[in-house]
Amino acid sequence: MDLMAHILVQGTQMLLVLALAPLLTGLVRKAKARLQRRRGASVFQPYRDLARLLRKEAVLAENASWLFRVVPYLVFAATWVAAALVPTFATGLIFSWSADLIAITALIGSARFFLALAGMDVGTSFGGLGSSREVMISSLAEPAMIMIVFSLALVAHSTQLSTIASVMLAGVGLRVSLALALVALLMVAVAENGRIPVDNPSTHLELTMVHEAMVLEYSGRHLALIELAAQLKLLLFLSLVACVFVPWGLAPVGAGVPGMALGLVSYAGKLAVGALVLAVFETSIAKMRVFRVPDFLGAALMLGLLGTLLLFVSGIL
Image (cartoon, rainbow, N blue to C red; front, side, top):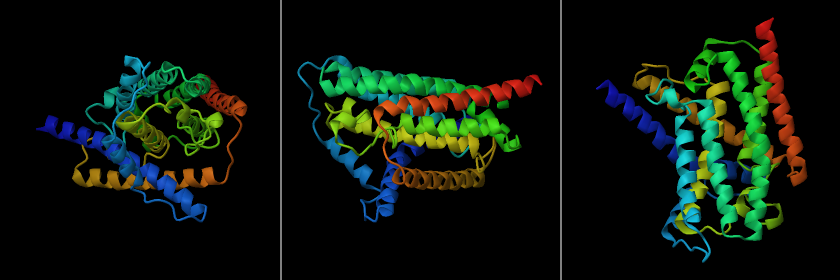
């Protein structure tokens, strides 16, 4: 009976991230519209967009290979698994042993790799342009992410998210190294999700696009899966920040239904605050040139490296 309850809670988390991802995107868009003194679309508009795309026929280029057809499913599956592994409202779930920061980083990198291949598969100029920019960004974002993982591992002596959240809840005090890791993680999250100032998710100017340039040839259900994967990725990084640096409200191991309900309310509040902060940040800053992105991610890499070195030196002393 306990096993069935654990499986039910884990399945609830998997369905929860899938259901909340479009709502989070709609909330960010609505907040940005209100900050720009516009009415904006409904927060449920992303659900309607996905439903409309799923009803449409997928049109494929004549020279598209089997890889082009398979990539949307691979990207969606990898991103959904990564997002479902991050503790959202409870820790110690049945699959918490696999909720490892290194595994999540690998899943995100795998999804990016296949999407870049799909962008080059058809042979369009914009697809190749977007893929090359995506690979350039990932070559700096992934080392920065690894440095952040090392910083957290030195504090919690583990890379499992449930363990890290438990250590943070127990109290580690104010540390400069963790502040550096938090800033680096936020910078990596902005770059990974193609948000301003690295990329503009709502742009239609081909010369400035990164993510959108790779998916120009997709349509129908394939485009719906890619859009949903992008929304899941945004939810993933906000959940990661909430789990590691703001773990208050997470239901501990063995918590009952009231603890789980409190965890759900706390998680929803964290997502709402994160969406509002992201909307304010994107409204108050302009998009940078593509050639400035390496400097931006280089700063994130240096911050992560400094945090790791500070923890390593303090551990020796």
